[in-house]
Amino acid sequence: MTVTHAVWEPYAGTAGHADAPRPVRAGAVELLVTGECRSRELGPGVVELELTRPASGGGVLRAEWRVPCVEATAYWTPTATDGLSWLPAAWSAPRQVSPAYGAPVGALVGVGDVGLCTFAAQTGPAEGREVSIGAGVVEETGEFRCWVQTEAVASGEGALGRLTVRIDTSRRHFGDCLAEVAGWWRESVERTAEVRVPDEARRPAYSTWYAMHQHVTPEAIELQAALGRELGLDTVIVDDGWMTGDRGRGYGQCGDWDPVSLPGTAAHVRRVHELGARYLLWFALPFVGAESSVWEEFRPYALARVDALDAIVVDPRYPVVRAHLADRLARPVEEWGMDGLKLDFIDRFHVADPPEPGPDADCASVAEGVERLLGEIRRRISAVAPHAMIETRQPYVSPALWPHATMIRAVDCPLGPAENRRRTVDARLVAGPLAVHADMLMWHPRESVEQLACHLVNVLFAVPQISVDLAALGEEHRETLAFWLGVFRARADLLQRGVFRPSRPDLGYPMVRSATADAVAVARYAALPVDASGAWRELLIANADTDPLVHLTGGAGDVHAVVRDARGRTVGEADLDLAAPGGARLSVPRGGLATLIRSATVDAAAR
Image 1: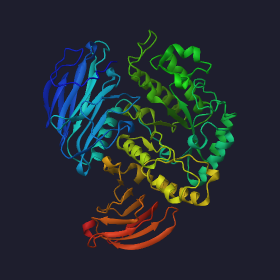
Image 2 (image 1 turned 45 degrees about the horizontal axis):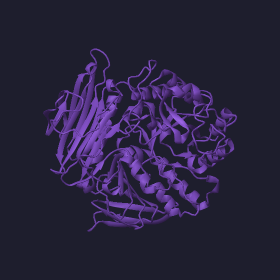
Image 3 (image 1 turned 90 degrees about the vertical axis):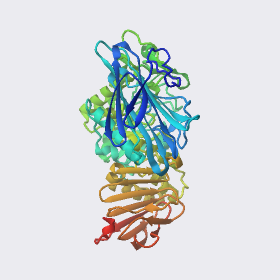
Image 4 (image 1 turned 90 degrees about the horizontal axis):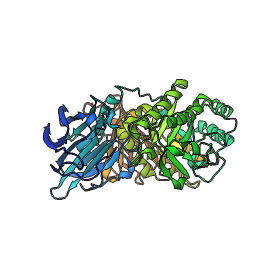
């Protein structure tokens, strides 16, 4: 499929097509559209626009609109590589979105974290779910211009191309607006597919990648699994290296997927299971390497060459490619008894100009091939293990992948706590039903316990993965890790399923909040006051800032506070009156956690 990349000016038409855009109004939004258009209001300030045309004739489906760029602070997108805390210019290159890369959503955020304009798209199956998205400041007028476009690919008589766009100018918290986008997507996805996320996907995990890289052996994995279970790590994720004896960190051996470095694989997996841990295995899904035995067989099916990696990306539009990959990837669960897969490099299927498919291809687009491939993998492993897990990662965050995955991990950012925070928050905002995992946590052996705790606090609203040699941990590091992993496990519903409200995307989310009916968790990454208002019975405050003095505002009623340090030791208790003039103050050490419990007699103002 070819998507027009050029900026499209009002009423100028689209290159290569005879269509002229037409003005329409949907609620309070004035648009220019191509295609047949229907609109409806979903709620105050929220409209849905459906564009259709006969797909058999091809053609562009497009919607464009502008909003005043007043008190705007950031343009939010779901993939970390798009940048954050800036407003692009209208002439900036559009984002190209497919199931293998990105998600069709964006949000212009204003002062006070309001959603000035949150928009998202869905496409019908005829288009292969590939979308172009443009957004940016119009320099001549100070407006923010947005457009969404796809093509109605020819697919047979009577078929309709479809592009559905949701536009939200309600000025609610941008997190609420994005949560509704995720709900809108989920409703559409679940019309045709089941989304299953087992509770196991939300439990802390151990990853071999940073700790071992390719130097994996059954003995090393089993040792870390045993030590991890003692600390509260429920799953072992074995990364690259298991399928090769080469330690050069290349991909030339990909394609055979034989467990070269895991002899006696099934027995090894049983030993890990006996420790009480689950087992996931890594695959570089799209690659077939030049050193594999199947190189000559699959070289004609190259979607793209990756010479630097000594491999090709194989083309999922071909049944023979999908059959090979599905057989290889189902084997760990079907034959070795593993509990799921870690799928890497799905974004490599996202290529700008795929070659024309040969006659034995059976998919109209690469995107369709990707979805068929992932669907077959999930079907086969779920038939053997209904609670099997599949990990994907940024930047492939499309809702089209929800039926084929259980969790999504932040893209690699080793020893980057602030970046891990930003990326997990970005993923949480539109991950819908999937569990969000942090990038693997690693640290130097001489790291302070306070900084180690801050690594964990920075990903408090995701699932932590740990990747260090647990056998080399000092006692203080073990205490810190065990304490915070206990918080993640005990409070998973509050931290991972609560109403999610991150603050100030323009500043990298210096405060993040999640709430259920009777509990609130706040993570503080800068010396900011904490809003203690609401009818909560329990308030958790995790402090990752060097300033220990936490100012509580807006609350009412008497509370009892227990403060623990980075290692989980109680270092203070206090009775506080949240309604005191000027609010209440509490000292929480860096890397520490305060738990506030409201007394039995709750002030009426707090209810």
